[in-house]
Length: 493
Image (spheres, rainbow, N blue to C red):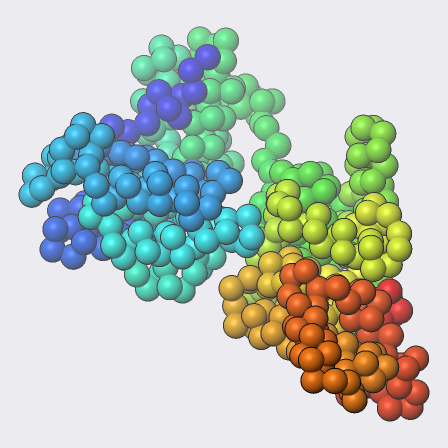
């Protein structure tokens, strides 16, 4: 069965319902593109016509389109290979565009607010370079405008698409019914429009689902055919971490949100410390740990009935850990390594396992979550430096554990300080091996020490990690004094 949202997708901007001001802005951008040559960001809630507007514009202008989706496993190389080539070189038909707008090519980058973390290594900078230097029109489509980087926002124009009103949705549903030969009660179409609350695409999907196999659509058909509408992830986070009055309310919300317990755990863990104080977080982490145990049983047994117990802990448990409700607005963020299966994760876990002398599974489930909580967003800084030094982490590893951007000055400076700290401790634990030796031997020792600071260092993790209190007696290093009481994992094993 053909998807009605595709079958009846507008073929011209004039066919779009609602958002007249936004449509006018998109058309004006295209008409004047030769004058400004800026990329355009089209943003707004899902289902309000953003992607349809981009393709309808291309049809009106006679432009070819190249579409790239941000949910792809994308790197800078992929962006440059596809979108970059399309935006700077020839069109699909072989023409170079020139002054003829009909020969141009429109590059459409969907889900542009979904470029984040190590998963899209280099993707942000590649897109920013693309929009600054493109020789063809570029439209970026986003749900959350402010989830995009500041540099990308500053390099583009933007047009906001608002939720589509009921008065604009009903005529679209009426036209589709007539084209499909379906009689209808007006109340039935009104009901579909009302329950979709501005989501035109959702309304069309609902209409197709309810009308399937019917020649006439009545109000009672819509009422009995109501589909459960999923709760968005951000309202869910509001309910669990801030606004929910009871654990039961949070648990009910977990049934409605369209995410697996695995993913909900990542969302909550990455955002919880934005609103929870120390005592609340301590209680909440116990529930998240219990949720992780149940998720482990799901992975081990493939028995997905255990998901319900994970859901109980990550929703009701975490909500119950709060001392009360909180108002105001909080900017929730996607987990930095959401859906990441990169080698960085395995490298981090392997380093933890080797340092502590236990299995990879134990390192991943029992130790890594605590290290992530203790150094969230590189705070406290001294403790993060200690961690990077103990495990000989590079920038990508520190970024993975702390949830901070790999290319930020903060992460880079932490790695540099960790390297200096390792060098100092190597000398402290050398037992005087570098003192009072012949010049030639000393030179060789310095060369060995320098090699130990690099990627193939020979110093053991135990020497580099920080069992300094045993050798120095009462004269503990300053960093260890500042971090007293912060680690709790035997100084990172």
